[in-house]
Image (cartoon, rainbow, N blue to C red; front, side):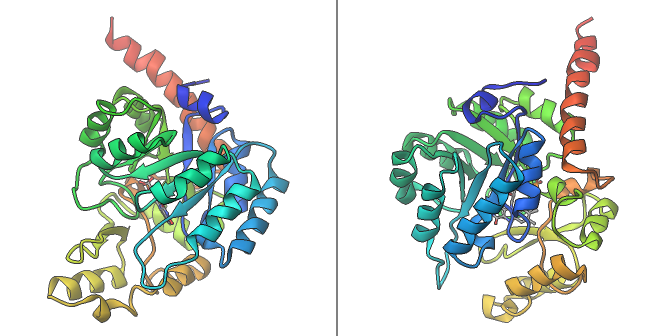
Length: 323
Ligand SMILES: Cc1cc2nc3c(=O)[nH]c(=O)nc-3n(C[C@H](O)[C@H](O)[C@H](O)COP(=O)(O)O)c2cc1C
């Protein structure tokens, strides 16, 4: 066992989190993570309506009796989804924890805190982490430049971001971005975090409901096989490099606008990649950690392997350094 205060606060066995993932954070994966003793998050906006989210939470409960949470990602949008309704479903369902991401969670905190739902806020800068701590969240997930999805615009990798945040954060803190094995977990603990969050690594597991081609591609890909799209729009996203991501980078670098790439980046195309395994059909999310993903284990095998090897690493190689 490897226990940190994160385990105490959230009532889980291992200091490992599976962060929210659009189209991936469904009951099959999240319940497998919970059953393996880690903390998984369903992704609220993967469900087309708040009612569907309530059903997905119920479905997850049928698959596990261990704690799990829901991710609520708040992103700027011309037609925003009904965030408050999704939030109310999270509160009413009685899940013990929510992962907020994308934006300052202040508007939603009173509802969560009033109902005793713990808040794990994921952000990509020390200043946002400090702000969230001041607002009274229960835990920070600090997401470095390596991460899949939205790394922000500061480009600070985990090796600096995590200890810089640890110097300012007193509540439990999870390190995110680029984690995939025991070495990462031990490094995160050494840098001052209380555990790790993984996205990409959990996609490449047996229980994640995406096409095998996507998982195989993650095994084959190296750490160089991602692209940063939307940089000139200051809404950067790290995605798997493919024909579409390269085209989007080219158009925007040449001065194109969002309108010029709107069709290429359509969410439905990315979703179709995950469902059909046609890897060049649209944009799909993956991180640099692909470079150290070499297999497609079950979630239980992955979690057990990480914590077992982390113990061996601490008591073996690292303890050996002291001699
Ligand atoms: C396929 C995929 C979809 C994601 N969708 C979301 C999302 O909807 N909301 C969110 O907060 N984070 C999302 N993320 C980010 C993860 O929760 C996590 O922060 C990130 O993957 C950590 O970096 P890693 O991939 O290097 O482990 C997504 C990641 C992946 C791989």
